[in-house]
Amino acid sequence: MNYRALFVGFGVTMLLFTGCGTENPPTPTPKSLPYESTLLGRGHQIFSNTCTPCHGQNGQGISGPALWGPNSAVAGFPGFSQLEQFIQQNMPASNPGSLTPAQAQAVASFLWHQNHR
Image (cartoon, rainbow, N blue to C red):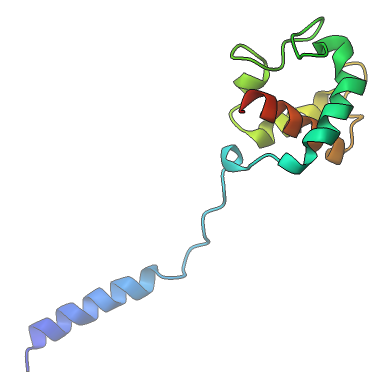
């Protein structure tokens, strides 16, 4: 009997088993979380009713920054979830945090789409 081959085989097997199932699966990074395309219409409506006084109907920026285009404020966010969180906590500037989480997600989806289409 070849004990060396048996020993090496046992060692390889133990290495495989010790690595399986011992760690939690990786969670997606905030950057990889997608926007909700189903919310685009609702987000556009909320944007038109709430955001245009500062950002303009075409997101060009008035008293607030531009929100789409290569130099927009949205282009500076590394991922969708950071944009959504920022909107939820800080917008509208006249009443920060007044949007519901669902409204913030819808607006973020609309803005993300405007910048990534």
